[in-house]
Amino acid sequence: MRTERKPGWWGKAYAFINHKECEYFPCHPTDDPDNFNCLFCYCPLYALKDACGGNFVYDVNGIKDCSHCSVPHKKENYGYITGKFDEIMEITRR
Image 1 (cartoon, rainbow, N blue to C red):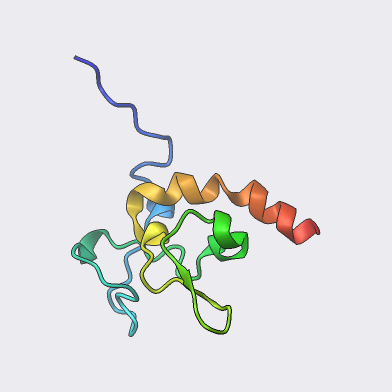
Image 2 (image 1 turned 90 degrees about the vertical axis):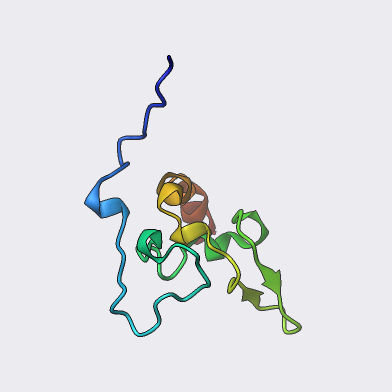
């Protein structure tokens, strides 16, 4: 039987924060509030525009609306988000 190997950050306290005491919790609809990750409250992927990988739309004023996106709030997406940091840094260099 093959066992799935978890990434090194899996289960670490630095990779997950659940802040139920926050007056905005949850900031997006969720069926699983106990596993709602607040670590990336302000999503670092916003700057990637269309390449963020999230569920977003642009409003009539061209503003990115991420209110239906749960990518930064899923515990298992910590690696996905931190894996995009090089792309985010490239944007800041321009």
